Length: 220
Image 1 (cartoon, rainbow, N blue to C red):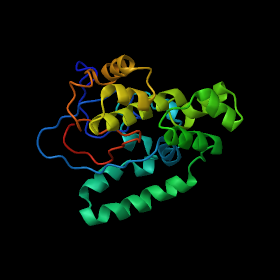
Image 2: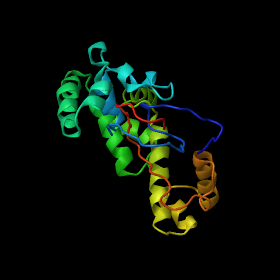
Image 3: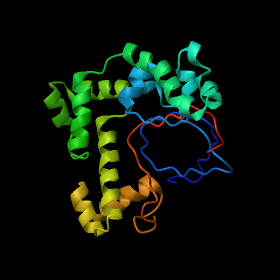
């Protein structure tokens, strides 16, 4: 959506928290299994530093251990009522055996959500008793984005909800932590490619969670 020239065809993907809006289209029926998880959950599950996820549209099957590479095909062939059990049996052991999340990263993640992104990295670092540089390094390892990037996502998400609730844009900008309405409009255009008034209400289904699609389906 933010860059209409950026067109990709994928059937199964895993991405970091998005910092720009995307327009997804498909033709015909779509089938698949979508797993929503926090970036830290994905880090524990796959055991791969999130800083290595910069390539767009990673195939989640390729991130799994070699013995589990056929999981997407197994999900596709399983009956609908069997899929949850298959995922539990396959993924929960990986989650339990995966790398642990730093308590400081977990705390900073929750603080970012509690404040809806209206907290600076320096404040988070001070609360974690870390330097800003160390906090950013650990965030990139376990979250994949910097604290500032997550804060931008959360502020924008909050602003979208306020706009969709019918608040005036000047009030939206104030409550979401932007300098003024012009600043909000600038961020909105950079994120979506449109102005706040050009994008219909409820058009964005925005989430700061990771969305790996594990079962192949129609191109999206």
